[in-house]
Image (cartoon, rainbow, N blue to C red):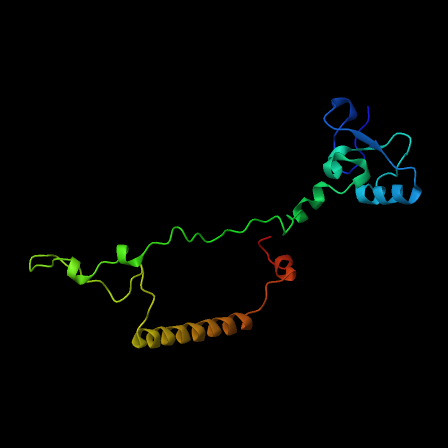
Length: 170
């Protein structure tokens, strides 16, 4: 039974899910493959160790092992193959068809016209100057209070291990 030499790969030769490739006879290329497999617990036994075809691009041994679980995060698409969304000019609608003019609408005295706020958002984040000044004053008071609390706490004696040892209530 042959198991893939790559760290964290459990593919076996008996399952026939992928092909098992021998390490190359060229010692330099074999060392390179061994480094790529990230096995620090043992070295390659050229007679029995194999790498499954799942680690080779297109499953071809000549491509060399390049596909590993730890490199999947960096497996980016080729920028030339990324499809860009094109702007469709066919869907542009003539403004004359969509726009409504005041002459198209008949407004009578009994027609309800809602009074909208000066903004067209769901929420108004705009503050008046008076609100901003008031908020600024409140924030300054909070800063002063927090600074005072920090100074008070820094004057207190720190709780130490000796306090626990010397305590009668142990």
